[in-house]
Length: 113
Length: 111
Image 1 (cartoon, chains in turn green, yellow):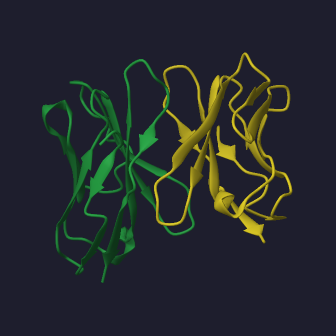
Image 2 (cartoon, rainbow over the protein chains, first blue to last red):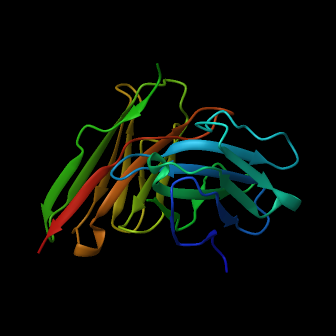
């Protein structure tokens, strides 16, 4: 497809389990972002990938959170030992090299019980 | 510190009326602005953007106004429809720094 895709769309897990969230950016987009959105809140920046440069991890809330981007395309956000406060919508966005506009995926709704 | 925010967290309008959603920003170096629309259960969707060398930009039923003097951004929606009900985010960017997003305004359209 032409847009950013994310999977799964919904994830329910138990406290203490690990989860992996996937993002497929728009083809050719070199920049990829992960955000977290709690209910009724704005976007919280988590991590940013740009090409082959070292990622900007300054927004990751704890060392339980990590992300990879293999081959400069697909990205995986991993949350280890999930906590109830991790429940949120996790949004991925991508941006072309010559563009300033980020295009968002539909998000993954994570619920930690 | 520098921030992006919104004057009104919620806005309720009658179908067919015009809507105005406001956003204040504090970074005088910001030179690029975007409005996003986020419907329930979906990701933010790009609506319209504007650069700091412009005061006004129009799209289909939407207009963005930028007042750099008072660092104010607004989104006007003409003839608001039920499908316009959503949360609207403004975002701003300066130079090489990345986007910063406001908290959002929830627009509700009454039939």
